[in-house]
Amino acid sequence: MGMSVIISAADADDAEQILKLQYLGYQSEAELYGDWTLEPLTQTLESLRGELSEQQFLVARLGDEVVGTVRGRIDSDGIARIGRLVVHPRMQRHGLGGRLLEALERRLAEDGRPLTAYRLFTGHRSLGNLRLYARQGYRQTAVEQVNGRLSLVHLEKSADAELAASA
Image (cartoon, rainbow, N blue to C red; front, side, top):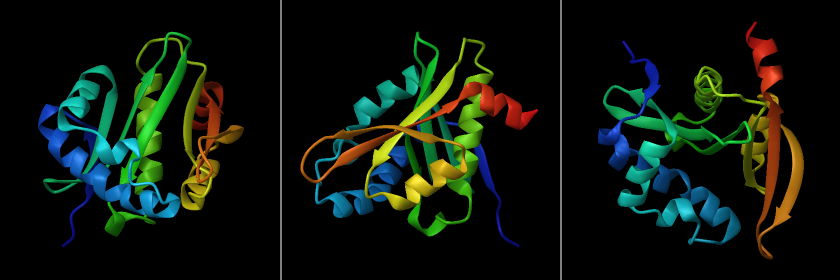
């Protein structure tokens, strides 16, 4: 009998597993862009622990193993900034990324603070990510050229659209 993946809030004890998963998950991005200095690959455990206290973090667990994670926060302007959606390579293409994103959107919407939109970004060559975000209702708002190898595609979804979808 197989185990179910459970999505829940992360806590300080998850920091090390989140950092390791983030490092594993961003290997393919680094290879895709020829850039091994991507911030998720160079982040320190201390820095990640600081973010845990400042943002909402969710983890997907398979037993005791963290196999997915995402984080986000609502800015003073009512924009939810979502980042670092990572799913373990062996768990990809089974809907876990979408489940994590939906769970974080719900959690942020229930935060009680004014919320107008969800925003995130990904690299222009990250076609799987772009497809996932499009399926989740995100639309491209801008493309920002970072360097000759990387452009960031900025995407947004109205918080009202999310509320309507869950009604």
